Amino acid sequence: MTEDDVEKVFQQFHRGKNVGSVKGTGMGLLIVKNIMDLHAGWVKIDSDPGVGSQVSLNFPVVDTEVIIKNIADPTESFQDQPAFR
Image (cartoon, rainbow, N blue to C red):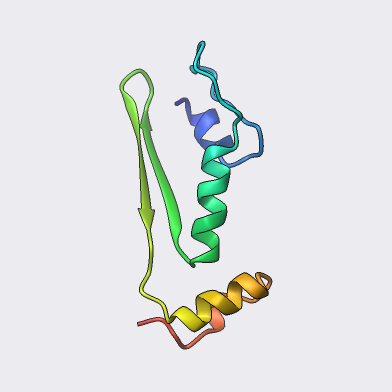
């Protein structure tokens, strides 16, 4: 992926310039990011154009009640929660 594509990869319907004839909707990594946000995690993308890309996911250890609360009210911040271990 180009640097420009990496910056836009979480935008709805964005598809990289190098996808060629590969079918897709441009929703996959946006869905992944939304799931990671709900779980107070993060997504990291490292890309070397012409070589390949690596997507890393980090799921923190969090009390499940905090996760359920965030799904019910995603406007609340995990940083305000004492449940991180």
